[in-house]
Image (cartoon, rainbow, N blue to C red; front, side):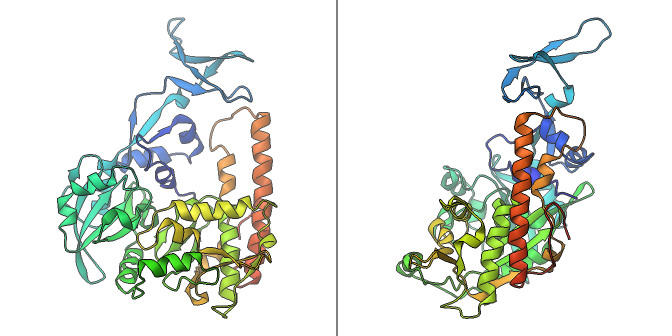
Length: 419
């Protein structure tokens, strides 16, 4: 079953995150009701404009409501230049906004904390309560928007957090860069890495929290600013303080964790995930730490302009991480510097882990092309999109097959099928 919470994580960094009717119709039956029951979303004012689905242009028009003749009920229409008046199902106009107060309450219940969370910065920061992780009592906080321009101001107003002796911060969205915190960097985990929805209640992956917190406490590599800059520039340098884990929730999402922190951009992209997976497989298969792990770029099946490789680096770069800055994340994929068309994942081979869940790999990109209920007109645009998705799955299957030859769990994979 696809991870319904992924619908939330895709929006949590937006200023006013909502789920519109079209998105709700693409979810599994009952998923919106589960999110409402869990207190994670609440219905808000209906949309007054909507994209046209009767033509190929995807234009947005204002909705006109008609309630005649008497007894016919309210109907909604838009005007399409090609098709004239087009009826709009009322379900398409419904909208749900994310409820962060409800999210804080759900997290509190998930860690068995009965008291209501305390909002310490309006709409941005909550004190959840105390909980024991890694044999230590910790103050648990929930935050959002810590990658926004005003993050420093939010933290300056969160005295309870900044004066805590053992804070653990869960973030609804991207993990902020370490520079946000100043000299006292707390343990930080994205909710996307630790939460699941069990019925209509949130559940927390306590083992993952324990592992991440313990791993952070045990990190012993301390580099000066000059050393960190040098390893970015040095084409042969390894990031010996970096571990990377690959896993999957079959059919729901792919998982890439760097030092225990989830990189959400790989969650629903089969191509990005399998390209990075093949790079990691080549690295892990060659135990020559300093001189090995190189892969010919063409084996990533990208275009001649290396745009696909640039997308991989950009995906790593844009996600904040408490241990690594943006340039360090980008430099995790290094060219050889010899103009021989080779690249590698710049980590130690023993620091790459492939979870057994990869043996049950399923493509997740295809679920975005399959409406879950109701019928929608197929247009030229949607047909092209479906063809592009099919080609992407074919390419991803080839990449996965190559990665498995290098030791990634699982057998052969065909496009459009899981194992």
